[in-house]
Length: 475
Image (cartoon, rainbow, N blue to C red; front, side, top):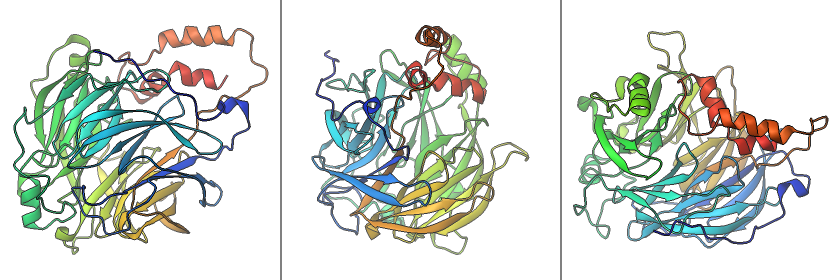
């Protein structure tokens, strides 16, 4: 099987060749075609699918830098950890998705495509890197399939997937892509139709060893556990875990996020407008990673559910969207599409079980259907995409209180569906550095090589996840 990458020219000079603005870039993807989506956007079809801005970290304003074309329905973005490469995927229930890679010019914000690969399934909705940063994994919502594609040190993709996993085991779907309910709806009949088939919505690795991938299945109300082999890309099922209490369902799990310090993870349930908290069994993960001992019980255990909307607001006219942990580790946020808000929860340290949630508040997003939001690298600005209002808005986040306040910065973007706030990777020229710094960096990297299992403490993971390439950039 040919897994060699395609090579194309770089889009702009190296970032080290010029002075680059330290403010981050914000890339927003937009839907360009509505008739082939599982859900029904109510905004305006975009003529150009990708817009790049510069975020002013002093006042939260955005300056438009570039607009890119050539991709139909880009709908999820992922930034490379060490290279100026952005990945996205395309969304269609009738055609296989594409994983697209772009070089990003740190100065101009220009995106230049450097490769694409078939995602192996329909309505591709999520991308993630494995721990080695040698593979990118795809999640296809409509037919529920998963794929693995090789990724090379410079960010290029292989020509095709080298591993796939289908939780349906090849069985045909019950619902046709040509005749299905609008997946934006959430009444009883819509829920029943959406849950006639499996619908994988994300694939996320536990952060401790990177050997178990968790896949929220919106169609079956479960979180799938998969044992992952980074060398082959093979995924084997370990078990399934309900995404909440059966009496409170249907739930429709959408995303899962792991805390960097506490042994907990959070599942946002799209249909029930809740966040479920799970304890993570790091001992079972360690035995699997270091000794190959398969767990006899699920590696995550349900411990709490909390609502994302006010108690009097009907769940039937709301669906949850994005869930995210603030980079301080103190807060978890979730967007509500229908209530049109972002709910903020405090992650409690001093309680019966560290990592449980209490509600801080709920803030209106000044637009309809906040499909996605993301913090800038500093954590002080939250950029939200309100899909059905054709707008992107910026909020200020108070780290002390967890409160969100409106900045009054709002911009017209047709059908925005994803926000990627990224800090370009730029080599810094530092004074007073010893002549043999490269040799020292090489020696250090031998002891902190990416992918090497360590204890599950947060500091160890932070060191381990910082690649040698990134460390060399600051020298």
